[in-house]
Image (cartoon, rainbow, N blue to C red; front, side, top):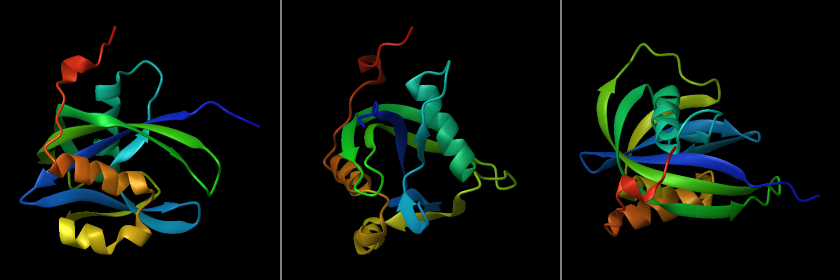
Length: 147
């Protein structure tokens, strides 16, 4: 049975040459991912990216750029994910904030650490986004039309 793709957002947040990542439970596995999640009703893609980052990490961020659209069909569940990735700057960390229930912890990881975790990344899209970010890909937020 073919179902519609799942629309998700993700956020690349870099500070001091380290990337904000979540260690989370997914389909019974422990994986690493950028702050990411599903678009909810009545919110823009940019609002969703900021919200998901806050809910999963406790970090308030300012969305600065659009990185790209990524598509992935998971071999685990057969679901096709269309992931819109944003670049954000960290603004304030709410250390007391209770994180989403599947989040084990947040970590700031270097590119070298991420490269060593390739087999534990939630999907290949995680590293694809980091590599695109490191190439300097940046699109203005005006690329996304919202009404």
